[in-house]
Length: 159
Image (tube, rainbow, N blue to C red; front, side, top):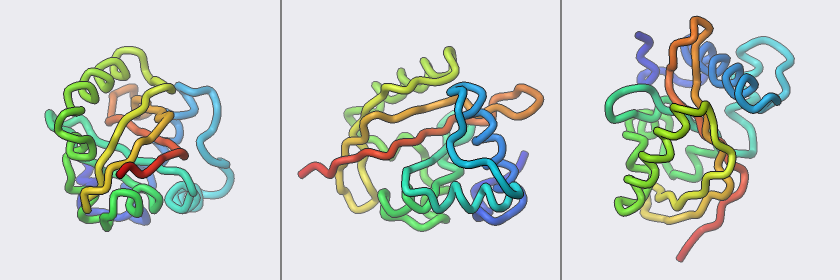
């Protein structure tokens, strides 16, 4: 098992994870998340520097975030190490975690959903509404599920 929590986006294991993330997105959504030209490292750099948020978590019983592009790190006000040690449930308000958990189970069954909306909370306590959020299963070439990814480009800070 690759320990994605102790890498950064330029490490070979994370570059490979980005390929799984991008391939799975294309599989489910039938379009590319980013332009897929160049080497896998160039694609990982393009994904990391995209203006929209991309994040993912693994398959642990209490899934831990294992990837966040710069937009995600900025929005949640964390560095790479903080972000990739955070249980993904902690990105949602305590009162919204059960709803989030049900939605993730729905994604597991159907592959992806494109119309989710949710209030999230940054490390500084800032609440924001992301709408719409697209969430998809990330699978490896052998078909095993590696985790789930999420992307969104619209969010609004709440007071």
